[in-house]
Length: 303
Image (cartoon, rainbow, N blue to C red; front, top):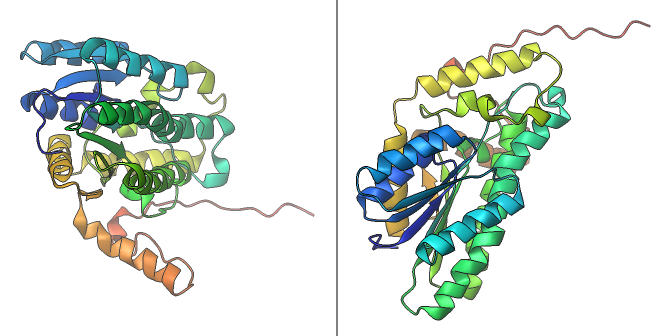
């Protein structure tokens, strides 16, 4: 996609972080915007902020883990602007701790937003985009799925999040091949950022009441939360930087969007372990200062 002016962008998780910056960048390019977020007040504020700049923008509160709400988002895009050109499946949440200590509610929340949110976006919007492509010979469409470097690595204390982002990478790679088998008018990318100052470390603020844990967090969960907050808050690259990198990749039709290329050395290490069928090395081997400090005593059950 080379020309963005007048095109329609649908963005989930649009009230903050990457999503808001995608919207700001899209507005600057003259795009029409359909914004979604699970938090109503921040969403309303973002819509008002962009409308004040002259952007053509509408918003809808949407929990992407629920297919019917994503359906409603698609219908809003069609009714407001008559179609969709650029879809950002961006909404995401984070949760950590030793993988066996994650509760069923932890898994349901993280996979519901991070995986099912992307599944719903792809299954609902892609057919609509294909219909547009069939009607309009000059139609250009594009889908960007937000994954993470955690979709290319498997760091400790991030099990549920890692799994969700690996799923997004695999889904996106499959989408790339499937689209290429049927059309040349729709492209896709997977965004794999490292730690950037966004609200991801505070995503529990939007966790539904029915998926809240009834027990206190374990020590490993507390350590994981502190680790993530420290890493995210100390990131040098901004969400605005990531948005600019992403739009450049869309222009270039570049599938893998890696915002922190230095981490590719660790990705290469993981791929070498797979290639040589050897045990996985420590994901923090090349970045010792980021290794989580977890001192748990595992007690054997008494006889």
